[in-house]
Amino acid sequence: MSYSVLEKDKLTTSKFIDFDKYEEIIYNNIYLDEFKIVIKMPCVGVKKKINHNIIKIEKFDLGRYDYLFSYD
Image (spheres, rainbow, N blue to C red):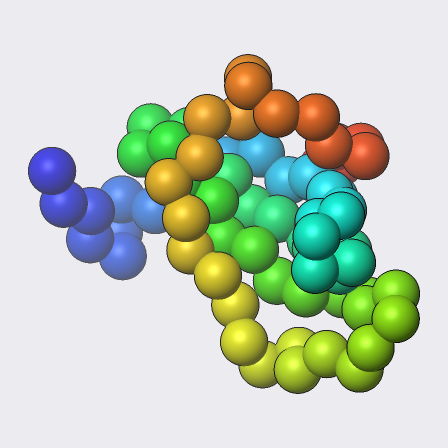
């Protein structure tokens, strides 16, 4: 399955904030429901300075994990 730029409005997304307790980083996330993929963008490092230019893209099932809060 592929999406062109013209079809981007058909994608269902969710936004949420979560905390990685192992890396001690707060992430801003965009979840692509259809693909079960999350794009994780670091916001704040609790104990160390973080690089805001490095994002993570991971396979993710939103229903199986806790997160701090969701937003629009």
